[in-house]
Image (tube, rainbow, N blue to C red; front, side, top):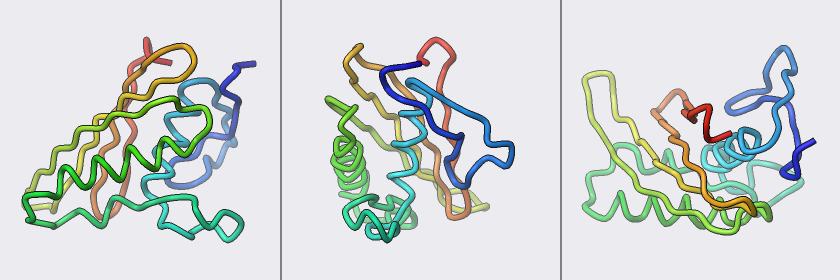
Amino acid sequence: MSHLGSDFSCLEDLDANLTPVEGRFALAQASGRRLITPTGGLFYASDYGDDVRRYLNSQAPSTPLRAAATAEGECEKDERVNRCDVTTTQTSTAAGDMLSLQVSLTDDDGPFDFTLNIDGLSAELLIEAGEV
Protein backbone atom coordinates (compact mmCIF):
# COMPACT_ATOMS: atom_id res chain seq x y z
CA MET A 1 0.00 0.00 0.00
CA SER A 2 1.19 3.50 -0.79
CA HIS A 3 2.38 5.81 1.96
CA LEU A 4 0.00 8.39 0.44
CA GLY A 5 -3.00 6.21 1.28
CA SER A 6 -5.86 4.86 -0.75
CA ASP A 7 -9.48 5.80 -1.37
CA PHE A 8 -12.33 5.09 -3.71
CA SER A 9 -12.11 6.89 -7.03
CA CYS A 10 -13.97 10.16 -6.67
CA LEU A 11 -13.56 13.54 -8.26
CA GLU A 12 -17.03 14.95 -8.83
CA ASP A 13 -18.90 11.97 -7.45
CA LEU A 14 -18.10 8.58 -5.98
CA ASP A 15 -17.26 6.02 -8.66
CA ALA A 16 -20.24 3.69 -9.01
CA ASN A 17 -17.92 0.67 -9.14
CA LEU A 18 -16.08 1.77 -5.97
CA THR A 19 -12.81 1.56 -7.88
CA PRO A 20 -9.89 1.87 -5.47
CA VAL A 21 -7.13 4.39 -6.18
CA GLU A 22 -3.91 4.92 -4.27
CA GLY A 23 -0.71 6.89 -4.21
CA ARG A 24 -0.30 10.00 -6.26
CA PHE A 25 -3.47 9.38 -8.26
CA ALA A 26 -5.47 9.33 -5.02
CA LEU A 27 -3.69 12.50 -3.86
CA ALA A 28 -4.39 14.25 -7.18
CA GLN A 29 -8.08 13.32 -6.94
CA ALA A 30 -8.24 14.50 -3.33
CA SER A 31 -6.66 17.80 -4.32
CA GLY A 32 -9.07 18.20 -7.23
CA ARG A 33 -12.04 17.56 -4.93
CA ARG A 34 -10.80 20.27 -2.57
CA LEU A 35 -10.85 22.73 -5.47
CA ILE A 36 -14.46 22.06 -6.50
CA THR A 37 -15.97 21.81 -3.00
CA PRO A 38 -17.30 25.03 -1.49
CA THR A 39 -15.80 25.97 1.87
CA GLY A 40 -17.99 24.38 4.51
CA GLY A 41 -19.45 21.98 1.95
CA LEU A 42 -18.63 19.05 4.22
CA PHE A 43 -20.56 19.26 7.48
CA TYR A 44 -17.78 17.48 9.35
CA ALA A 45 -14.89 19.59 8.00
CA SER A 46 -15.76 23.29 7.98
CA ASP A 47 -12.31 24.34 6.68
CA TYR A 48 -12.28 21.83 3.78
CA GLY A 49 -12.62 23.07 0.22
CA ASP A 50 -12.47 26.33 -1.70
CA ASP A 51 -14.42 26.13 -4.95
CA VAL A 52 -12.38 27.79 -7.69
CA ARG A 53 -15.35 27.68 -10.07
CA ARG A 54 -16.27 31.07 -8.65
CA TYR A 55 -13.51 32.48 -10.86
CA LEU A 56 -15.25 31.32 -14.03
CA ASN A 57 -16.73 34.17 -16.08
CA SER A 58 -14.62 36.76 -14.25
CA GLN A 59 -12.99 39.30 -16.51
CA ALA A 60 -10.88 40.89 -13.76
CA PRO A 61 -7.18 40.97 -14.68
CA SER A 62 -6.25 39.50 -11.29
CA THR A 63 -8.45 36.41 -11.73
CA PRO A 64 -5.71 33.96 -12.82
CA LEU A 65 -3.45 34.95 -9.92
CA ARG A 66 -6.28 34.82 -7.39
CA ALA A 67 -7.43 31.41 -8.65
CA ALA A 68 -3.86 30.06 -8.48
CA ALA A 69 -3.31 31.40 -4.95
CA THR A 70 -6.64 29.93 -3.80
CA ALA A 71 -5.76 26.53 -5.27
CA GLU A 72 -2.26 26.50 -3.78
CA GLY A 73 -3.50 27.37 -0.32
CA GLU A 74 -6.25 24.78 -0.38
CA CYS A 75 -4.03 21.96 -1.67
CA GLU A 76 -1.39 22.70 0.96
CA LYS A 77 -3.96 22.05 3.70
CA ASP A 78 -3.54 18.33 2.93
CA GLU A 79 -0.81 16.98 5.21
CA ARG A 80 0.55 14.82 2.36
CA VAL A 81 1.39 17.94 0.34
CA ASN A 82 4.67 19.69 1.11
CA ARG A 83 4.27 22.36 -1.56
CA CYS A 84 1.85 23.28 -4.31
CA ASP A 85 2.41 25.55 -7.30
CA VAL A 86 -0.43 26.36 -9.67
CA THR A 87 -0.71 28.25 -12.93
CA THR A 88 -4.08 28.92 -14.45
CA THR A 89 -5.49 29.52 -17.89
CA GLN A 90 -9.01 30.74 -18.54
CA THR A 91 -10.59 30.29 -21.94
CA SER A 92 -13.94 31.42 -23.26
CA THR A 93 -15.80 29.56 -25.98
CA ALA A 94 -19.34 29.50 -27.28
CA ALA A 95 -19.95 26.57 -24.91
CA GLY A 96 -18.83 28.64 -21.90
CA ASP A 97 -15.76 29.43 -19.87
CA MET A 98 -13.18 26.88 -18.76
CA LEU A 99 -10.56 27.28 -16.07
CA SER A 100 -7.51 25.06 -16.45
CA LEU A 101 -5.23 24.63 -13.45
CA GLN A 102 -1.76 23.20 -14.05
CA VAL A 103 -0.86 21.86 -10.62
CA SER A 104 2.57 20.83 -9.39
CA LEU A 105 2.35 19.07 -6.04
CA THR A 106 5.38 18.09 -4.02
CA ASP A 107 5.01 15.14 -1.66
CA ASP A 108 7.72 13.28 0.27
CA ASP A 109 8.88 11.64 -2.97
CA GLY A 110 9.24 14.93 -4.86
CA PRO A 111 7.09 16.86 -7.33
CA PHE A 112 4.47 15.55 -9.71
CA ASP A 113 2.09 17.35 -12.05
CA PHE A 114 -1.52 17.15 -13.09
CA THR A 115 -4.08 19.35 -14.77
CA LEU A 116 -7.58 20.08 -13.53
CA ASN A 117 -9.99 21.45 -16.14
CA ILE A 118 -13.14 22.99 -14.71
CA ASP A 119 -16.18 24.45 -16.41
CA GLY A 120 -19.58 25.37 -15.05
CA LEU A 121 -20.79 21.77 -15.16
CA SER A 122 -17.85 19.44 -14.71
CA ALA A 123 -14.28 18.87 -13.65
CA GLU A 124 -11.72 16.69 -15.41
CA LEU A 125 -8.43 15.50 -13.94
CA LEU A 126 -5.57 14.82 -16.35
CA ILE A 127 -2.45 13.06 -15.09
CA GLU A 128 0.17 11.20 -17.07
CA ALA A 129 0.79 7.56 -16.22
CA GLY A 130 4.43 8.29 -15.39
CA GLU A 131 3.35 10.75 -12.70
CA VAL A 132 1.42 8.23 -10.59
